[in-house]
Image (cartoon, rainbow, N blue to C red):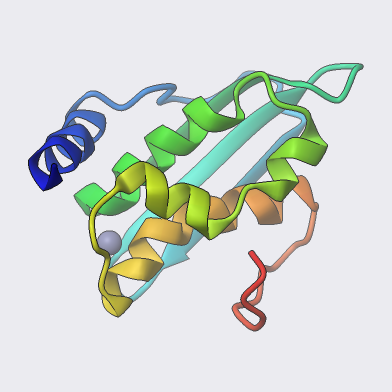
Length: 132
Ligand code: ZN
């Protein structure tokens, strides 16, 4: 079972989905994880019905950080902003499907942090509080 998830992570890392940038994003945000050197930027385009109709990410870093960003873009595509705000770290960890140690957790959750900071339009996301 673990092998399936490991393969899936490597597949997303090697063939990232929705990689690139949007010409006219309504939301864009970038964060880094200095512990590992991961950088992720997410561009969203939200239409008049509050639906995320386009999403792109760009970045560099370890396989976990990039794969989770790729998976996240697939999760938010077609969702409303409200739904995107409800995505939790459990959703990401479930999609990754392997055990993530405390150090790797920051890698795994970087993309979610970027998304949340982006959709809430906060200039700077803080790490306190566990509810993201
Ligand atoms: Zn990393």
